[in-house]
Length: 459
Image (cartoon, rainbow, N blue to C red; front, side):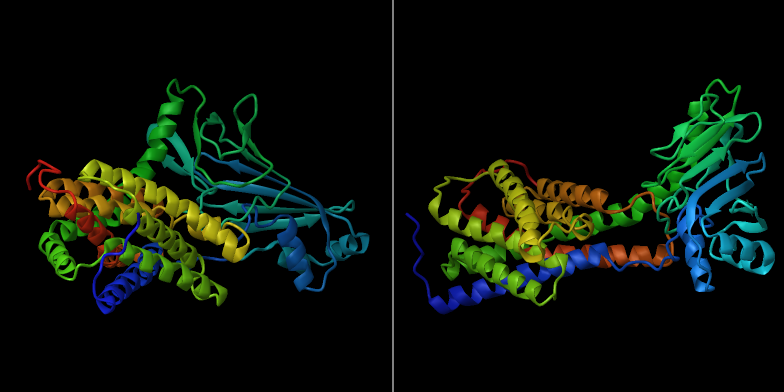
């Protein structure tokens, strides 16, 4: 039977309230710090910024009624990496065709996109309504290993920062003379002779490489060309945004033994009921998440708060009802994994409950952080049982897994630079370590009932 331990009500409520505040407010701050502010970015544009809707919008801004019925683009790559664009937009309105044919300035204004890297060379319009614009893009591709050319024009981080769609109904990339297309954008097709890459849609970016037609190991040189630019970026990102935060958090966990043992002593002296504390935290958290979300205060963080609160509530109720003799590190680890799964499901359910749908865009980079938090439960258990290195390895594995799934390892340092990223990583790591204190405490309280010898390892 589930029974509350007899202890002064005021002490129970005080401890429950303190734990609730730390657990609930902390999770919101942690995810906010690690996900971070959105970086400034150029305005979104399609891959072909002189095609389709962009031309229609620029014409409308100048009082011209213009509808593009078909838009195609061909970019021919030269040996020096320059790309020559030929863009054809078919116009429906006959009066607009006649007007553009008579007004060179208006034609130029409609197709000269200032925020595109390509330079307008010429623009003409035929009697049957084909508006043809020619552009020159000086750095469409760059030389790479093995006499290959590598183009980042179709990537977000190594080309244009904010690509949005293809723009054209069909886009063809022609390889330099004597070369063929090797690596392609996802979703693209290659011509039978290998000289052309054809795109009819753009959803996800990727590198394009061109290798000599007679290269025996062209695929290998293509891979090396891409790895040469991604490798250093991934290494720096991993060091700054994964290794540094992991080192900070594991160091704080490794130094938490005395604090956790003090918490144990206080809990025992007050006869605090751990199951009741967790139940109070869960109820308070779920109520706060629902109230805050109804007022639009938390956004997707409110659903994370709800997910963690559900786990606290379920754990509190189960703790009092289940009789587990001498819990061990492995059973605590298994319980934490189960709690992580429940938190993830409850978070998604909370998103549907509060907003009518799963907010994947916001939850995607946040859900993995739950892995780091729940890993601190077995880490706290191991710490007070004297297994310091097991505690450090457990916390480190959880944090590393969470950050690898969260941090965009292939993204370059843009607006804020490396120094800001380093400062941000350290601040976020400290915040997450502080916010993870309630999870460590739960692990320490579980160890109260473990008895001697739960873990034989020594720190």
